[in-house]
Image (cartoon, rainbow, N blue to C red; front, top):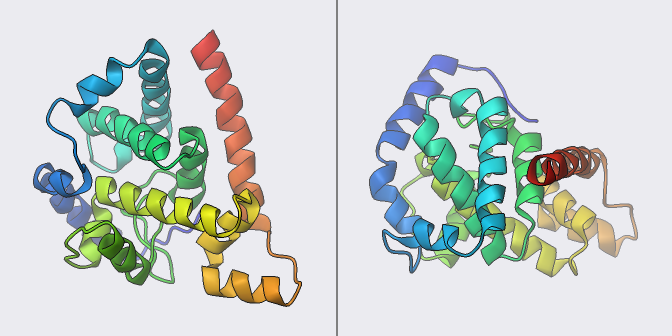
Length: 217
């Protein structure tokens, strides 16, 4: 987890302002999705509905209200995490584990290196991802919008997984250290994985086990 506590109130206030505008920004992160998209998702089967409820329960109990986002956003974010993960061929619980590791579900998180939001994305990386997704980049403040942060983060993670042959540990190392650093290590025959990937997998195993009790209990 890479949270720092500088000017906490100012960051939180800024996050609330950004989220207040998310009703407009969501249109930029929901491609080919009309107002009935989430209702259509729920119609695809009870297993998806239960998965959304599970993700929502994790967000509610571990996110401390996701720093002012409110219960309505918990439900919508749970749906959004499922939608984005499945669209990119990722396990939504794996994505949830990465979010837990990076930010502890604390939306205004910002690292010492400047990575921001739920998935702790550097503004420079986010700008590149936004260009790939044809999202109008309006500056680092967009990373405090959880929907944009998740869409960019999941897109980035999926791309790294593909680059490194779906090796989850190398993909996570690249997400954490940057692909240039990881590629350099690989060329030198050096070990790439590390403590960050292990923390994500520890969280993944715990959340996966809990989901089994939740979904099958």
